[in-house]
Length: 412
Image (cartoon, rainbow, N blue to C red; front, side, top):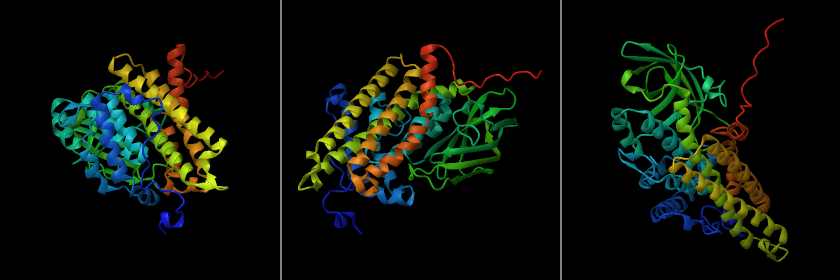
């Protein structure tokens, strides 16, 4: 049954509420170009994503019908200049992902993986020929990319990965397994990280869809980001020609450079999710009545709503400042990690408060909050768990690493 017929007392997220979370007028910090990006993405997300996304989330299917709409936004490629990419500011790219996440976190993650991981790796670590061959079609979303670092045995300890690359005449042979790779079941090109058997260092490779020995199988039964097609990738004697070896990746430090930038955008995803939840709760509390008055008139409801609003102001200020530090060449890995860890923690509190405010409707995807509540959980974990990101910052501020495995004692 249509939710509007079953529960006419409140408007569902299919008709998305207006944005009312910029209480401190943070838009004043943005350039006209950045505001234009925000308006363009917000309008498309509310008009084209919101009406259909709940049913895709329920079925855990990817909405391929939305890819042309996402392509028209001209945000794929983010900060990359040239090669058909938009060359946005860091703030502009982050805002775009946040505005998509405000309506649906899964679509935002699809774009984040494609833009801020795979495309950015090619832009930062590829040669001119690779950029010319891959970036234009990826920027237009005529082709889709994924990024394969995590393995079944190596998540937070990604630098210890066991996938190997063996040099042969004319190219490389890849063997190994990757897990939790977003977009992998349908991506046209996959950025794969593997250990060079000669140097024992991490190298990067571009593996095309349909390459013999390459397969990707969807991970089923997720409770969050259900639309994102995360997969298990198997690499069995996959041949990669020399022209598709990313020459700019010669150690895990090169991979970490990409992660430091992508973590900026990931820190903005919880901001977008929290904005959407706040907007939904703000409207719902005024529409829904109990004891003859709107829920918005109750003190406890107002207190929770204000706590959510305060979180969003603080998260957005931290996210904006992080972007400015990066643009000035001052951002450190610890600063990026702190923003990702702290923002996801505050967003977790925000969406939990939203779930409480909506009562029983807080567990129904039609009103956004339940979906956002679940979708935030994998974001809290991916691109470094809260704990690991906290320890990256801890190492930076103390000068002491706390998460290296202790040395084994020699036998007596």
